[in-house]
Length: 313
Image (cartoon, rainbow, N blue to C red; front, side, top):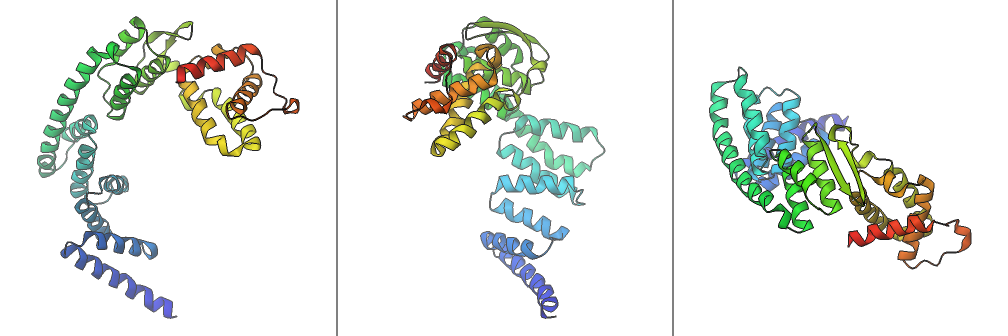
């Protein structure tokens, strides 16, 4: 019976403390109190908005973006207050293209004029940020061939993360007209896939050449090579569990080199490739193998794995 009396009092008490902490600009205290409140009760719509204010004051943009996104998806009635928070978080993380697309979409809808006036400075900032970034990206793409592998990969990753897919034609030209490190080729293919590019491109790597249609490519994490990785990780965990994380990293790096030609490169069964990788990794970490391990990899597969490891250095 006492619990029924105490908890309503606790809820009111926590809410009062939150309001006092916010009024006194003790935002970290308010954040801790919000966590305590959420342990026992669902936040009211007013609580949810006040929590957004708290996260904004703390400059906790990642959590603010997540919370704002949840409230928008749930149809919170304070749409006009939540949307600016969400947009500002996107600006903070330099997702300029997304900001422009979202505000353009809102401009086509029958939304409150005051909300649009609040959002337009974000639109201008995103446009300027995107323009500045594209000038820098354009320069890097113009000098792309002269950069080293790491710089090339870093540029492509930044473009993917910022959802800037303005350079598809440039990358297709670079891909088909340049000699590139196999990993760079893989990242270009990922860029084109993320851009939903529908072109067919000529891919040259590891003495193989093939025309591939971007829309027909399989995502890295869904290729049959994942089955081989799982088999190897399972076997290594039985023998040398401490090196399993290193195994995962090494095989992912090898896949980046081979993709999308993993099957063509080895031209062997998954079982044979998995056995060879197990043998290679155990040797790499100084494990003395006995015949009863069942590892009798072909010289051809072992040579190809060693070739991948050389390219990985």
